[in-house]
Image 1: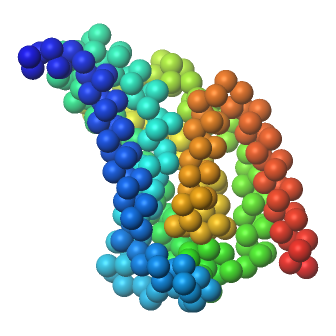
Image 2 (image 1 turned 180 degrees about the vertical axis):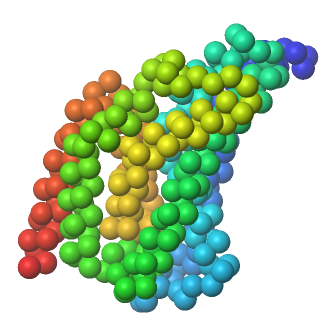
Length: 254
């Protein structure tokens, strides 16, 4: 019976990944440990004072948010990795290495989450964020939209997107054997995804870090950009739309 289950490693990994994503979304929907009622009732109030506990809570919030938003679009690469490993290793070893690959991927987003917390602290220090963790400055919001739009056209964005949208290309060029190799590959793939999407995640400061509409919207766009066959054209179209939106916001602020 156990051997039969182990031979279904792809299914086990898929179900496990889906469970992790579901838990992450549930955590966000529940408020991620934040007082969302106060945020909704007093959105223009100054943010909460920073304490070590609050900083840790923010780091967990950002990381769980990244897991919820990014793990689904990484699933094709994770499952393809599991398929290749299953042909090389025993079922149990393949499943373990696949989870380690996923852990490496999520570690890359943990690094981004730490950077996002530091950025949030800087914004709050200069009075640029409200209690709802949204920009209080039209100049900041408009500039962020334009910068995110311009980034869509950069060679770095397109190079990272190329590896994110093609699991086979990534695995063929960056394959590393063994357990350590699994983690390094996951970390590298996560780094490409961070390079592809980090500016889009910064836009959460424009609409509100805990704004579920923005979170879901960006997550759906990221999945479409990475999984649909016209992802590159979608990237350029989104870039143009972001630049136009940022220009309008700045024009209204003047």
